[in-house]
Length: 468
Ligand code: HEM
Image (cartoon, rainbow, N blue to C red):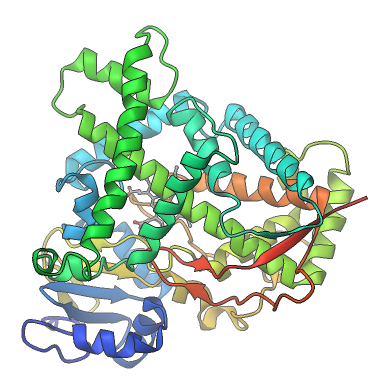
């Protein structure tokens, strides 16, 4: 007979394990490190009670795959923090579930594809943005650059060409501030959603300390930007010639008169793409720079491969990937070691369900230990940045099933192809033109991440030295 609830630290009445979590996080370790140490004590299915909410942390390849592929775990939590970004309702893709989620996901993918998603068109957008980024770095070559935000606008531009038919200057002040807001939002809590999920009523008593005030103002700014973008589309739309995803959605809304196509739904879809597509890729790219600049040998081998396959003049292209095994291995190793989606995106049990020997009650939040999967014992020397681990003796690329940075199953990331293409193009365009150096006098950057909804690198500077 299955046990009632997975084991974990003893919960107190009302607060559950919140005091214990706060006590353990006082030394500022990231949440995923605490979940990992508790999983070692209590097992791969760790049962917590955080305030009013059951939270189960699942570790290990097989269990993570099982949760990701069983329909009963395809839900997304109803937590207040997750829903405050979508007008208190389940809209969009990321924090939606049921029939509305599968329909939105299907339609958004259809629209994205019709504007070139994962096609030659998209490659052109990525190339154009890489060239703009290289041009900007050439203009400040030789000077120390704080790199932590340097990919933000580039990444938004690529996606926004499809979604809103628009690109911004890489130094656009308004978009840069908006990206900073997204970064701040992502640092404010971890993937369990924090106190606003566990005890949502505290927002009335402590709007400042609970983070409610700040988060509300960030969401307002993001929604104002999206509303303005959608209104500009409404004013200039030609129903016979949709220009982008927003136009397609608006046209379908006019034609269908279906309750599904509301302005709110469209706004949350845009927010999902902006947040889901910007932070993750930009942070992984920054971690990638960090490991390249800290490992001379890796940088030398990348330069050699780029010089051999592409040479100094021609623009890198996605078709070069097949012949660039070392570069591909650097990308896989960057995705592994940084694991920016450290706990994935929370799933929710849609009904009571058995997992292993335990009952997971309906409504339980389920976090997947992706960072641990990618940085645990399977990898032998997980803390070393060693792209060779993904290359066979014969020089072929290894697709290791322990690496699943984009998740798996019906909820897997819709941006995987785009993210992999962007990372390849960023790396090759930059290293074709520059040698990266840590400025004299700066300390070697820390590889310890900042905590948050996703992980990010601590601030560090790089000199982009133009290659002869
Ligand atoms: C390195 C970059 C990225 C990483 C590591 C990443 C990772 C993930 C992960 C782990 C999930 C959750 C899977 C699950 O629930 O089990 C996810 C979902 C999602 N991602 Fe990404 N992602 C990245 C880039 C992108 C991009 C570029 C986009 C935009 C096109 C995007 C849009 C989404 C959306 C909309 C979902 C929700 C899917 C759903 O709930 O059905 N992601 N991503």
